[in-house]
Amino acid sequence: MSMLEQRGAVTIVAVAGTLIMCLFSLAAADLGAMLHARARAQAAADAAALAAAVAQAPILGRGDDPEAAAREVAEANGVTLLSCACTTGGSVATVEVQTAARPILIAAWSSRRIRARASAEVDPDVFSYRDG
Image 1 (cartoon, rainbow, N blue to C red):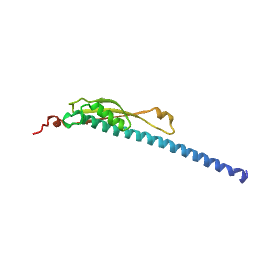
Image 2: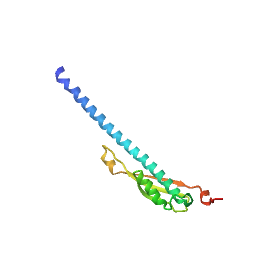
Image 3: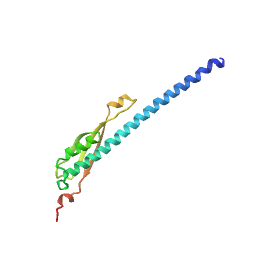
Image 4: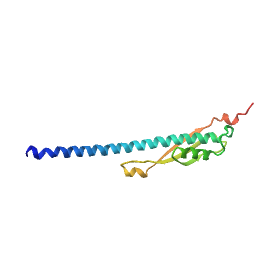
């Protein structure tokens, strides 16, 4: 083969290598999106659990419906509240939230739901506090 016949082969290899690197980059971006969604769901669950725990203690004057408080905080953080194990006058609130991932390349991940669970506890002394 002459040099003129081989000249286009390097271009094809370079284009194929570039395409593979682009696909790898998009897959890495999808993985990052999944990890970000997981962190966002956990942060929202933590915030919702704290809101529910505070609403459970009537003496704090922050409402009397802990589940509604947890739902409001969860929705404000872009997630859906799945469950709230909390009662007015109780000291522990446990919530579970869910959100969806938004991948770019890997379509199978688009239907995946990401869940997070968190608990918060009010110091029991808060319930026995009285103004002196």
